[in-house]
Image (cartoon, rainbow, N blue to C red; front, side):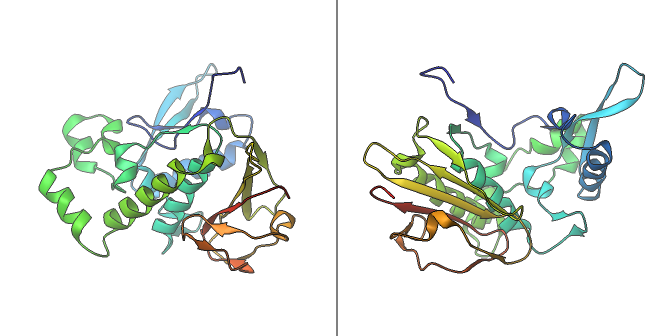
Length: 245
C-alpha cells in the first residue's frame, strides 16, 4: 500500500451488501444459500443479468443487524452477540473504520419503507423519529441500547489504542476455522494487540501460542486478562501487551 494511503473498512452502508466479490471465491450453491437465508431473515436480493442471460444477485438488501439473525439453520438466540462480533472484527482490521448510522443503532428491516418507495434499498434507510430512537436508547434490555452502548465503548477504546493506528502492522494468526485472530503492531514502543473472535455459536478453546507468555490486558474490560481457556459463542477480545515478546 502506498505511504499515506489506508483501507476504509465497513460492513454496511446506505446501499445493499455487495455479493459480487464472492464470485470465484465461493461455490455458486453457497451464494444461493446465502441469498435464500437473507430472504428468510426478511431481506431481498437485487439482481443483474449476466452475459449468458441468467439472473444473478449483485447485492443483498437487508439491515446488517437483521442479516445477523441466525445461521444456515435459521434464526437463533445469538443475533446481538453475532452482530457485535462482526463489528469488533471489522474495527480491529488495519485501516480506518466507518460505522453506518443504522449499524450504530441496530436497526431492523424497514419493510414499510420498501413498500412506500418501491425501492429495495429503502429497507436499510429508515428515518428515525427522534422520540422513538431516544426511547429505545434509554430503555434497558432493548437491542438498540445494547448495540449503541457496546459499539460506542469499542470506538472509545479503539480511538485511544496506538496499535489501531492505520499504519500499525497487521498479521493474521494461525487458528482453527472457528476463530479469527489478528495481531496489530508492534508499535515503535513494542506494544502489541491480539484481536481474537469466536465466529461460531459454540464455546471454542482459546489456544494461541502468541498468548501463552507475558502479561495481557483486556482493553474493553480495562482489566488484566485472566487467561480464560475458552471463548463463549461470538465473544471477541482485544488483548494488549507492552514490550517485546
